Length: 201
Image 1 (cartoon, rainbow, N blue to C red):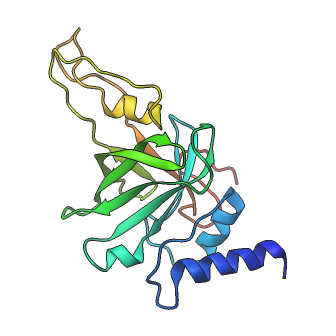
Image 2: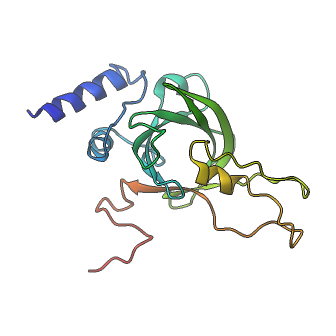
């Protein structure tokens, strides 16, 4: 058995535990993330996702230990990133189920100090009907409020759009495309297809 396969098996055994009651396994590259997904019985929202505005790929997996005590919760860990402040394997956040079906609370760290991910912030996300996207509910700001955008914040593109408030020119909600996460693995049909791309036969 190859070294990588042995390592993956150990990660899954240690991560899931004999009763599936420990922390979610962690992947340090996209291939390992795919192998973990193929080894585990995934829920609809589990898998590999991307933050398109920040070019950060994450793995979302059920955190079974915490899920036994309240609504289901999920760990969000970094798989690939263009942001030098993030590292592969970083547990950047959590995803929590709410009383409303398909609506979740996303909690993400916004700053890093040495090896610590700090200052988590939350927002609501709705899982799309086909399960391939999370649409984030934007925070409404008062008309006269100014957006204090901190570019040292982790995932700045994501938080910039989430925090978009009232458009001063129109006096109404600003118009911008939906923001959130897009699922890239596993695909909806198991063949690597995406509803967002033309499929040629």
